[in-house]
Amino acid sequence: MTREEISALISSNDYQHVVLELSTGMGKTKMALEYMNKYNPETILIVIPRLVLIDNWKEEINKWGYTHLLDKITFSTYTSLHKHSDINWNIVCYDEAHHLSDRCKTIDSVTNAEHKMFLSATLKREHKRWINHHYPIAKFISVSLKEAIDNEVLPDPKIFLIPLTLDTANSTEILVKKNKKTTLTIDCFYKDRWKYMKLYNCNIKCTPQQYYTEISNDIEYWKKQSMFKKSFEFKWLKCCNDRLKWLANQKITIVKTILKQLKDYRVLTFCSSIEHTELLGKYCVNSKNKSSIDNLRLFNEGKVKHITRVAMLDEGCNLAQCKVGLFAMLNSSDRMIFQRLGRILRHKEPVIIIPYYKNTREEEKYFIGLQKKSVALFFYYYLLKLKVRQVRKMLWHS
Image (cartoon, rainbow, N blue to C red):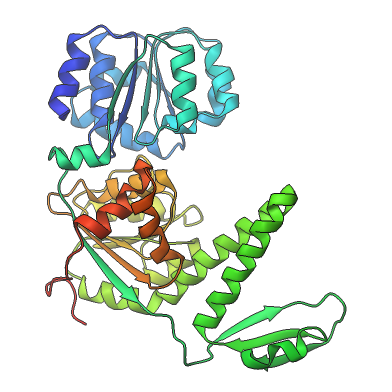
C-alpha cells in the first residue's frame, strides 16, 4: 500500500480504533493527524517514549497545517500515563506503541477514550495479541520495510559492505584473567598463559584475533551456565555487550578514514556507546550530552554535516536530508535495525555503509538472516543477496 492509499482508507472509513504498523519514513505522524482531525476532537492525548519527541510532533503539526489541534493536545510519556487515566479523552494516540509495558496496558484498560491509535514500525507479537484481545474491532494497517521498498514507497538504498580483518600479528590487546585464589598479578604473552593462570591474576598480551576468540569463549561458557542458573544470564548478556563495544572500538580508525572521504555529504553515524559517539564526532547526540538537541538542530539547519548518535535518534526524531548512514556498530535488535534504516530512507538517494569484521559475530548476523524467516533480519538478507555493490569511487578510496 502507498501513503495515499492508506490515507484514503483512513479518511473514507469510520474506524473506532486504528493500528498503523508502518515502516519508519512512511509518514505515520501525518496519517495520525489526519485521523484525529477527521473527528474534530476536543481532547487528545498523545503518549510518547520521551519528552524530546514533543518538538517533532509540533513540527509535523505545523508542517501539515493542523495547528488548530495544538490547544486540544496533551502530551504524556509512557511512565506518566497514570496521571491521565481519570480523564475522558476523545482520542488517545500511542506513538511508538511497542513501548506499551504491562503496567501501561493495565493503565490503558481504565483510560476512557472514544478512539485509540497505536503507531509503530516494529510492533511485537505480544502487543498485537493484546490489541486484538482488548480492541477486536481495531483496524490493522501494516506495511513492512521490504514491501515499502519493493513498492517504491521508500527509496532503494545503495548499500556498501566493507569487510575488515582482525589483526593476527601484533599483540596490542591486554586480556585480564582473574584468579580468586591469589592477589598476585603477572604479565605474560598469550602463548604462555596456561603456565600462569592457575597461580596468578594475569594480564595477557594478545592479538585482536586472540582477544576476540577469548571473549567469544567466555560468552559461550556463560550462555551454557545461564541455561542451568538464571542468575548467570546477566553475565552472559554483559559479555555479549562487551564484545559488541570492543568490535566497534576496533573500527574507530577505519570509520574516521571513511568519514574523511564523506566530508561533503550529510552523514549520520550509528555508534555503540556514549563514549563511542564522542570519539567519532564533535557533534554527538546522546543522553548525557546537554548539547544534543542543539546539535540535532544544527544538523537539520544544514550548519553541520555529520552527527554521531547512540539511542536518542532511534525513534521519532526526523533528520532533514540525511544521505549517508554509517553503521560503526551492528545490532541484531529488530526494532533498532528498522528505526535506524528509517533515519536514512527519508533521503531520495540514501546510502548505507557498513564496515564489519570477517569471521566474527558481525559476519554471522548476515548469514543468520538468510536462514531465519524473521522479517526483522530481512535487512541482513537484503544486504548480502540483493544490494551488495562495490563502493563507488565518489564515496570511498582505499
